[in-house]
Length: 290
Image 1 (cartoon, helix red, strand yellow):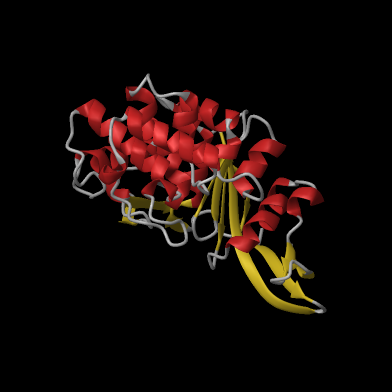
Image 2: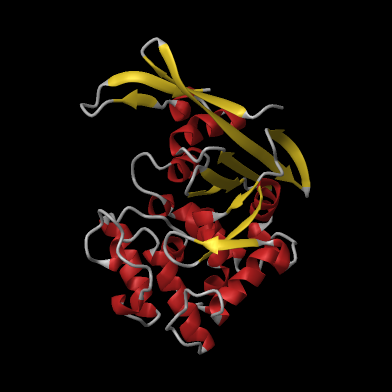
């Protein structure tokens, strides 16, 4: 099947077309695909549930809400800030220990950064392991070496087969094929610590993205029991309660194409797929659709 074409129409004209690659995996085999399931890309924030596995295993004192925020890409909404602050204090650590840098448009508080929960979780693991917290974000730190091994093992790859780069928040990010991402999500619940991750995310979808319009949050609300996590540059990974894993990637990285493509690939209704093209006045001037 060809890649999913998401068309942007403004008035009567087609203004842009985005290609989206997608794959579904169940019991270790591809059950459906569009485009190239072997497309290699970076996991970006879709890997956060995997990066939280050591936290789930090693810190039994971490609450469900705190575990959910460790998997989140949040919008600094009050409940999200409260959860990130709570996890940071539990580590124990302070905002000064966070090595992610301020995020544009979020103010001076590092807790407002959309990856603050993930970083607070990293600090909590370092405390549990007795590792230094300084430089925890660097590739040669024991934490990041552990996470590389963790993600490679989850995808059933050797560590040298996993591409690495630097994510937007300063920590390593990992690259592999969409098929391997979908496979990893399909077995996340069975991994050591994965049950806690799935329970936390499915119980608190509002913490994972944001309250209105986040594709991953909305998908988990629409399909109770599903797991979903979006990533930068037009990526989303998901898993069903029955053990199917799904990964979609917008080829040009434009996030606006993700929701209509996901709705088309999963057969979701028009209420989920609706993606109007709006101007700065909030007026509908076109549509984004498959």
